[in-house]
Image (cartoon, rainbow, N blue to C red):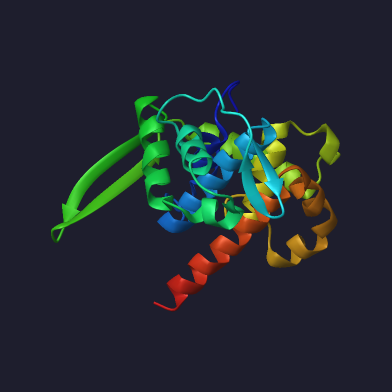
Length: 212
């Protein structure tokens, strides 16, 4: 991960399945990206957890128009609400914001066309090795390559969010996840309310999708 790279951008690249050449379902991806932005704000001291709700403290030095700035503006202008509310809100717009940032930075290629009058978007990484390398680092963090306390903060948080979202690119089998519950709880610790909200949001999205 590059120095200064945002967690939402890294989460987007991490979520891309190089083998299947696709991203997760849009609602799941949007929730993951917003959770990453919330984690940045929480870890930087811009937000605090207050009885399961996000409370704004100090404004971040965020680039205008970035997902972190958008999320901060929403929270700071609203009465206290649950983390799940902020993970789920405007999830589709979150995908667009981060996608456009990565496209402008020439990290991804976005191709648009129409199929039977419906717009279709194809996204591919320009530097697939970055997604692969990031997935390897996050996968090792989940599986226990080194003590949690020695992990880079960004890798630890991405690992926490990836397990919460059951991200197919890095998360092991369900059986292996159950065997590593103690480590996963350690990974979650700095961003626990956000990870818990993300897990519930993704579960809701998958239930709604399977229900048709």
